[in-house]
Length: 240
Image (cartoon, rainbow, N blue to C red; front, side, top):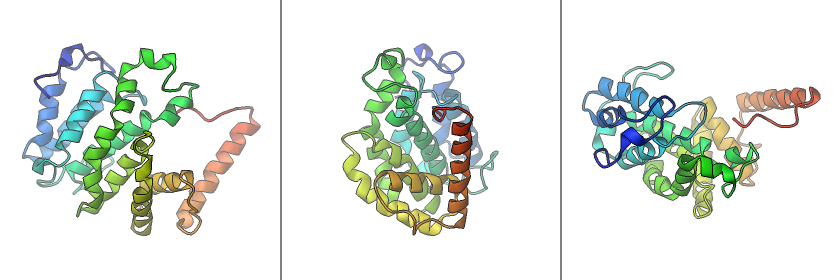
């Protein structure tokens, strides 16, 4: 995949993807500090303002391909900004894939008045390609829902949730709902709890008995924020 892709012709936020093959290869380096640096260098290079670039798709395919590679669990990622010591490289990869999946989600696209069959996709081939490849990404993520490491398990769930917006994957939501309840029973991670509760509510589940005091406080805070925006004349939430 690294040698067979024309990286130099793929658009990134700044320039094209010549730097990506070597950076992606370092994601499998036996040195955990090298892997941690490669996460920021390779994945950060194709991540900017919730946009899916041409280079994002082959990077995502590479990440999906190496999720079960032994190197992603050999040791731990070194400490980086905003991340705790002992964070598995595999979980970092899942975090990025999940974040990208939310950016490519149909609902996020629709927030801008755009749909998968609109002309917008004609100007964003990376977005279209990522949306079409969601079943491929889901197959890579699914085995990790039962990983022995809690961080990996939970990161896999949050990555899987937006992928099930693909029509071929909606039948997996029942299984993910069970995993979401398990996460809510054990995790205090704010972002993951928000995603799990949001998904369960969207899928028609009663989440009132799953919320803790912090969840309720955050929900009420955002309800006030939305009310203030409406009072000020804003007709919709921002698209991202």
